[in-house]
Structures are given as C-alpha cells and as structure tokens.
Length: 601
Image (cartoon, rainbow, N blue to C red):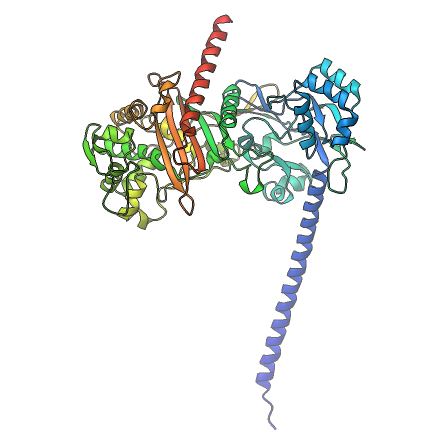
C-alpha cells in the first residue's frame, strides 16, 4: 500500500506552525496578564493610599495671577478639619462654638460643613475663600484641643475650593499617565511610581516646571465604610528627599479680583453648566475664565473637571457675527441694505424666531434683531467655502490658545484640553445649500468654544487678525527671575479684512444693545455692544444654549466677554445677558478702585 508522505509532511509542518503560534500567543497573553495585574495592583495601591492621605504640602511651585498674587500654592497656617458625626459635635459643642466665632461662621453653618465633610479639608472663610489663620487665631484654636481640628502649615493644594479650578487643573496619582508622559524621568528617578502629577489644566501643561521636589503627607485611619476616624492615629510623614531641581512659579494672565468676581456672579446666578471668558482686547490675554459645574459635590456624570470654557458647543446666533463680517467684506451687502422677512425662508423648513417675521428692515436691524431669514439668505449667497474662510480668519475651527516653541518642545500648548470647534462636518456639507443656510444662523454642524467666542470679538479690533490668547505670561524662579516668557502672538495673515468692515460690525453690535435683542444690558455702568445667541441642542431639541458676547466700553473698548449657559430648558432664559452686564460692571468697578488707589499712592 502506497503512503502519501507528502500530505503527512505538510500536515505535520502545519501542526508544528500552529503549535508554535499558539505557544507565542499564550506567552504573550501571559505576559500581558502579568503586566496588567501589576499595573492594576499599582493603581489599586495608589488609590487606596490616596484615599487615606491628606497632602499637607505638595512641594509644587506656586501659580500666581498677573500681579503676583497667589492663586494656588500659597503656604501658610490653615485650619484642617476632619469629618465629624453628631455625637462628636455634641461632645465638643462649647469649643466648636468658639471655633465658629474665630472663623466668622454661625455655629449652625460650621457644624453643617463639618458634618458634610467626606475627608479632611482646610476650612475656607464663610464666603468660601481661602483662610490663612493669624498666629493669635492659631494659638487659640490649638489650645481648645478638639480631636479632628488641627492648625497646620500647608500649601492647600488639594482644597476643594478656589479660583479657576478647571483652568488650574488637578494633581493626582495616575501611574498610567505618569509612565506615558514622563517615562524617561520615571526611569531616571526624577519621579517615583506613586508620584503625584498634574493631570489636567495648567497643572498638567506646566508639570515639568511645577513638579514637586518634596511632599508632606498626613495618613489617617478610616472606619469600615472608608470614613476618616476624626483624626485618630494621625501620622505625619516627612517630605521625601528632593533633587537639586527647583519648583518654579507660573505667572498667569488672570486678574485675581476679576476672576473672583466672575466666579461669584456664576454662583449668584445659579449656573449649573456654562462658562465665562473675560479677555483683554489690547493683548488678547485671558483675565478670567470660569466654568461650571464645580468639582466639589457635583455629579460624576456631569464631568465637573471638564473646562467648559474651552469645550465646543452649538453657538446659535452669535455666529451671525462671522456671516456679517463676510457679507460686508465681500461687498454683497451694506449696513443700510433693505431686506424683507416674512418669517419663513421657504425652503429647508427654516423659520424665524419671530412669528410672522420682522417685515421690512435694514441689514443693521437684521443683525440687531437677529433675523434668521436674512442671515440664511446671506449664507446661501456667500457659500460654504467663503463662510469657513472668514470663520477661520476670525479664529474659529482651530485651537486658539497660545502655542509655540518652549525649550526642546516645538509645539508647546498652554492648555492641553482645548477643543478645536467646527464649521462644516464634511466637504459635502460645505456644498449643501440647506446645510449652508443653517450654518448661517449658527446651527447644523457649527461648534464654538467660549474662548473662541471672546477671541472672535477681540479679533474685530486687530484688523480681523486672530490673536492667540495667553493664559500664562511667564515661568519664573522663586526669586522672580524669568526662565520662560510667552510673548503675544497672532495667526499668520492669509488675507486682510477691510478696516471699514470691522467698524461696521462693531456698530451693528452696538445697535443690538440700543434697539435689538440685547437691550437688557443698557443699564450697565458702561456703554456696551454685543450679540445674543440661542441654539437648540439635544436629541429632542428641547434644550438651549444661551449666549452673549460683546465688548466694552463702547467708546474706548478694553474688554471682550463671552458667556454661555449650556442646555437650559428655557429658550428665554435671561441670565446670559445679566451675567454679561454684571461682569462688565464688576470690571468697571475694579478699574475705578485701582485708579483711586493709584491716586492715593
């Protein structure tokens, strides 16, 4: 009987190949499983350790405002409070009443704050600001000997309150991110596997300058539910040995007083989701940037650490500012060109917000009253390519915050989380007349960030040249010597917008305040100019973004402001206008006080 040896040999070879391949895969899976388990163990260890620690002093460099006043990292004595239950409160009631008096709280307000604590925290003032206790206050509080109430020297880096929280960012243990971003430094020993690093905001962007050289930590015991045991078995760990490197200071463009005012206004107006950006027109510098919701006590699903000021969302009618610039600059319309609005475009199902339409009106009036029909018609005449060309010229559909060379890094960005925004989602959409008409009123694919919106206004004062807003002025050593300076920048020009066009648009923004949709801000301390916007959002289109952008004072423009309330249920919500006016009023007050202080000096 003849044997088919060729078949047997090929089968044996195929089996061997299969076996070897299986062995390689099995080995690889085993390696992955081993590495994954090690990484998981490291993360679990980091999380467990972090949940039972209070960072007294992070050892990181300070973050300052433009005047050198600390925003984050100021070292001083603060009252550190541990969570208390009602039994502990009753046991120390008399002493806690004295603490309340020293701290400027009512007794009930202090107790509510202590009961609500989930972990140790420095106690803020009754206004919610940072409280550095005086030597006399420290001695009196320490003499009370209340378990869970301690006065410590701290830089307060982990406080769940403070200014510009999303912009400043957070510092955490994140072994994966540490390995990804700083693998070489980890290998060299600059970082340890469980080192804390900046994971968002300026803390992340400027981590190489701010990084900790030493760290003082308190560890504390927890009960079965993970709650701190009121300071029992407290143990302070000494700072780890640092290197010869220096923790530098980051000097931001923020104005502490203006930032504080903006944060308070958002709180007073009950903004659940939104942002405000205040920009200096002459330089493009960001003087205040605030985002809601806040990280403390909010829903995890709300993503409170996401900075809404640099997140894209639907702009609605504030985008008509771009269309107005394009239409005037290309000469297809003049401020006094007459239109007739009957309330419907007659195609694409596009209607005006005013039932029956605005009737006969000039282009200036169409802008002031935010007529959808006029701007849809103009968008069709301009075409998608021209609209996008002018939008990009004015700083949209691109990241606008300062970027450039910094030492060995050729594309350094001051804010990593900034989103780009969008005008058209595809080339086909840019050619689709219906999509173009909807784009003309700031709907369809259009997305803007509040930072881009403020910068759009600022661009109207720089020959239509879009600046790259700075958030940081310089990095300096602790003795004030600059080691890195970020100079003002603007995007390279590919064409110029006529100065006459920009003047006309600025006047139309004033008309919106004098006779149009923004008349509510006429009561402001300064004469203002601006543009409102309402955009339908959500799958059912039952939520709205409410916008207000503009500048002031009208005769001597110095500040641009953008305000957005995201996803509100009421299309007539007046708060964006109110917030815009209140921000401008506060800036006017601060300016006046600074002038008076200068005279007294």
